[in-house]
Length: 405
Image (tube, rainbow, N blue to C red; front, side, top):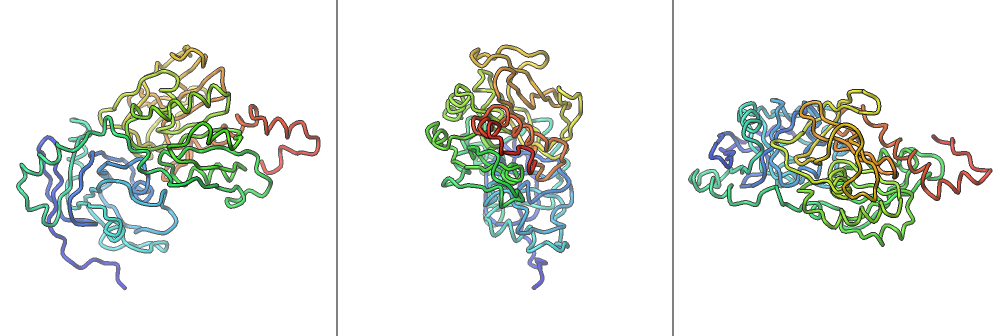
């Protein structure tokens, strides 16, 4: 069966909150969708981008002009669904051409109910969002595209803002589950067990940790401190996820109890923002955010520039430079360990007096470069140094800690 869609696409509109309207053709599902228009600068990895839960509530504008060449496969999805609100491309591939492809991107979007638009000037849209900032938007196709534009603009503006949104609970796992090291190439006994709080977890992250001998107990975003301590974990991990970190009061309170207990901690993306809030710093919304697998970051400890994969519209308000006492002074000294070379935004935090650190970017590299993948090794080392289970292994003369490392 040919994957080429020979049916003519109907008209579609991308409507921005300021009244800007872009006309194109329907792509994926037909209908209407609302969300925050954001752009991502990745030239590849559109399947990983679409299935990243951090894009929940957002209409993704691809800056790369030609999208869909490699179709969609059954291996590269980063979550169980597409949580993005909509999808905007310039030149959609007429048919996929890759030995791993199982269906076209157009078919996947339609099957998942994702309303998209193609044939629009994504360069102009991106330049507009860079100037005016990410904004409320809507995609309208089919009968919805025939409505008066003034009515569509009003509907776009009436939707809730991303600022103040609480979305992690909408994308998290329904029930706890376990990821075993043996399922990802680890041949020895697990070195560590961690509680991983799913705020919008991408599947590459458990794979990276499990391949290093870590057994993950993945818990929903609503997990309590008692849920964590019942596992007697060597560490706690907070994942990426969507929404405004200012709404994550429960996760902030949970993380403070983790830090107070001295349990090693690692967080990424939304987890970095929760960590910043737990330390007493504020967060704020960026004008248009950082999205794409080509974002340069300075790593303070090494002086090395790392090219990173990012997807965030909020950031932690912490001072660059020398370490300072955390506003929540019981946690001691904290330093900004990484920062963006584009706009000096905080991209990582590290406690000097407790075993805890976080980064704003995505070291799991799906899709993206591998410059920062050693952060998973750093978390394992932190647990080696601070967890009771690791201390017990060190005290046992028959245990070889280097096996499988």
